[in-house]
Image (cartoon, rainbow, N blue to C red; front, top):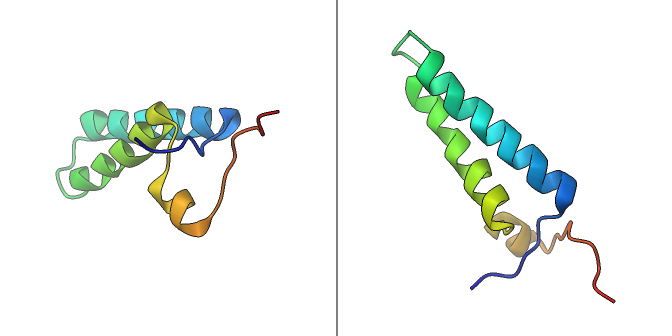
Length: 67
């Protein structure tokens, strides 16, 4: 469907940051900013799928080159 444009370290960082933000959603007791932690879904999904629509628009690619 989409080209892979997210490389190894980038992918790992996206998954870790996404999981941390989602964990913050469940661990935060104040309801004021709980919705902000749901932003963690975006890096988690892009990391798991290996594709980032914003990278495609900007022409970026962190995947290693295929020979």
